[in-house]
Image (cartoon, rainbow, N blue to C red):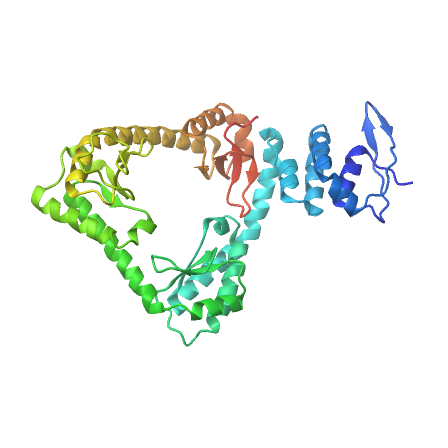
Length: 414
């Protein structure tokens, strides 16, 4: 007779593995063992019962001893369960004293696994840069997946380029990620899902001369932004990539530059520390008197001033004069905040002897600092587990796929 405990039955139902498989698990509870019968499960039945099964599986999982949880997490991953379930079971938030020992070992394994691919990736990038004068980049989602994934994509790109020896691609920047085409900066985009032959076909359609012209145009535009910012008296002028490619952007900068030659730099002097961002929107027919009018404003978080591309130079100057003190105050507050956070970061690195401490995206400043303080308070318990590792304060406990760091939740439970 096939007999399984409740947890094993649920696992079997979710995976559909018991059609012709005999297994037995000893289910212990309240100090005594008990056998329970189980029917054969088909994949069709498992599919219908999946939502209920997942919910019950999570509840049963939480009641297991920690060592059993870890073993089951490995089993679930080996069975190829869907990412949602595997993530919730294996990556659920748990006390650091349970998570860190295995995480540190897993980090070492992944670091060792990635050493070869990292070196290979660097060699391949250098070879393409020196041999074909082509630079290669990856979108963030691919960079986070590890060097081995990037090496496989580079090998595919090399095969595609080998078929194009007759085409001059000197100076071209290729970005592997999503979609095909040439963006406004002149970079050639290739989708990671495409085959080597697909990439060859796409590259054959690229006009290298047009790519280079776009690159030069973008460089000249950045030089113009810097020159105008200096003349106007702000720290920098910038905009989105999309707006920079619009025909109206360069004339806007030229008008502002001409105004600066006659009026000089804007006052007050606080403006010299403030960035100016150009936005889409409509300028007012009168000098703006309050923030929030169609593109005029101040970012309350980052402290940059915004003006619409349709604004006149006079409107731009008046808005900068009015908002510069507020923007500078925000920037000063941010600098002081950053200095406090940086001081805490260095203190944690020294106290726990970390290789480095990072702050993950989306982690609030207060959360980062509180986590640093708690790490310092628990330095004796954490130091022996984390010494020599790179740690990133994030939202969940996990190990980076490329072995670069251990993530610990900013509101961790020790």
